[in-house]
Length: 53
Image (cartoon, rainbow, N blue to C red; front, side, top):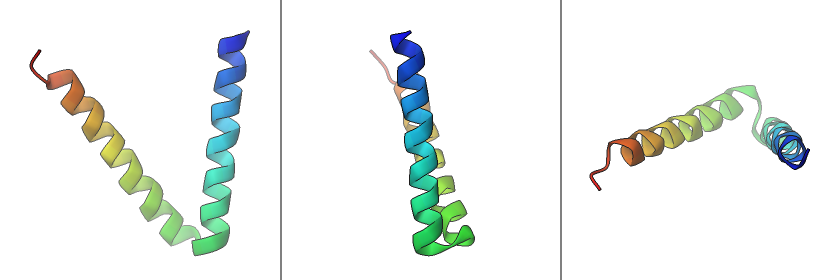
């Protein structure tokens, strides 16, 4: 149950973040911002997986 609440909180936080970006910058800038952040997160995860011990 706690894990479910954490997931719901994370999704609502993400939705509010995207809505705030949209209202401040518009759709194009929001897509660019979110794309760059997803790229950096993916690169960081990939680097952590591939890092030597």
